[in-house]
Length: 439
Image 1: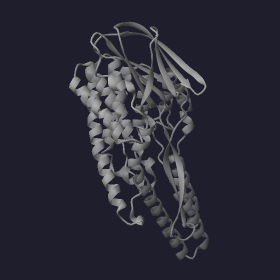
Image 2 (image 1 turned 180 degrees about the vertical axis):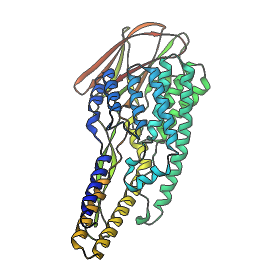
Image 3 (image 1 turned 90 degrees about the vertical axis):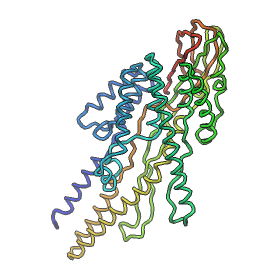
């Protein structure tokens, strides 16, 4: 042990460091293709990364990420059937993640949260059904879309119950002395305006007016319950969706812009009542950050000369940040407990070496155990990357017929992008057009 101990510790350190490392650069070719609308190129890069023997981002334990990312890119590419299959697989795996094995959970207390299979964030689980409903709509299957809407409603009700219990825990904790309070912040999000909007449209499109009215009321309620998420005014067109005049058709547009936030590692240094070199700890914690978005205004123009704005319905990035709050407190607690366990083990090993009157070995053990504890702590930065950042909607009543539709995206410097499309507006039913600009 005197001769081999430091070498053994160094080898263990390197193993943990490299086994836990991730490579954000591996996303670069996928990200670039997605942002500029080259979805075939993005799918090629994504599948190529998945097929690597030691994939940096879609390796073992990251199946949910793979199916979420590929499902979204396939949706943007118009591969609706393939996208639907991937979303169904991701949803199944998320459900299974609630009963993940004890061995994986124990691993998160020994190494870090990356030791466990990725189980998905709450907002990812919701948006699976939003985009799968759109998949079924584009495939001409409105009943299939309504199945997804009902799944959405079930998840929203379940989420509201969980978040209400979390609020009560935070409230109870705040009544304790400051040093005993939980580092938790309750999420205010429990109802998605985007989900309710989709439900309202699909129910209206199939003649279920009572159900459409219920989702309309729930949409209004979503804005009331979470002002931090719905910090903007409700799109004016929403109030017109259930009162389409006789003889006219209702054209609805939904545009998705930008890309959803990502996680980055934030290091917090805290003092500890332990002897050196364990007298302070570095806690690597995940933090949600936005990605750049260039479109700040979207307008639709018809060849008849009519024009109308597409207004922000849901800041999907804000939903991601808000739902992240519900798990952040537990992450802080687990990270702190894990560091203390590693430091205590290091102290024990150092003391054992010192008892053998081997001061040199004791110093090395202290040094390497501290480095091991630092290097093995890595924040879990896994998150799907290709959900949009914003959902904008607009609607107009039109005489049935054929139209040329142009959707213009504007930034601070003027027009960024235009997309033209030939459309047909029919009386009754649902005339929904989806647009995407991810820059």
